[in-house]
Amino acid sequence: MARLESNKKMGYYPTPPKTLKHICEWIRFQYSSNKERSYNVLDPCAGTGEALAELIYKNIHTLINAYGIELDMDRAVEAQKR
Image (cartoon, rainbow, N blue to C red; front, top):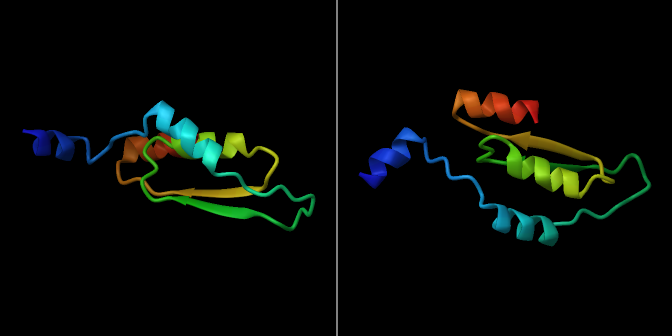
């Protein structure tokens, strides 16, 4: 039954908030006043984009190009809005 439920959700298991907090504390992009310097970030399982948005928010003073991949259309649209 668990596999059927996972298939129904298309394997969607959002990152728990506590884990996301630890990830955002661990990943920091080096700040540079050079406007030419930017970072590219890829989330291959973007879901609703919450984790990627949080990571960018925690590094607000850095230019980040964010890319996310999501197979479910509804979640992809929500992620794109974020």
